[in-house]
Image (tube, rainbow, N blue to C red):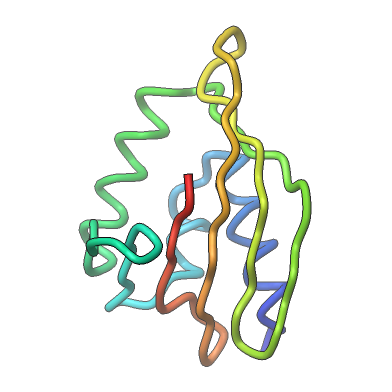
Length: 111
């Protein structure tokens, strides 16, 4: 089984390659995505796949640069710089992944 950091890195690599299948393969069927201390914005791998299929289609140059990573137990926190297009200014985000059994179960975003 992969370590939580390896799971986080594998999904990031697939995200940057815009490989939807490889990216989604790292997420649990009942994945939950939320804004940190805010509402749940997505539930389930079907909704997750739909959101990221659209993101990859709308932004073919989308990519994220890992600025830093902290891993404690089953939680991995990635600080990222994200570009949607080659010409748009990037933005920073933090993704907090809760990983159990080698799968991402929850993601909390800070933007």
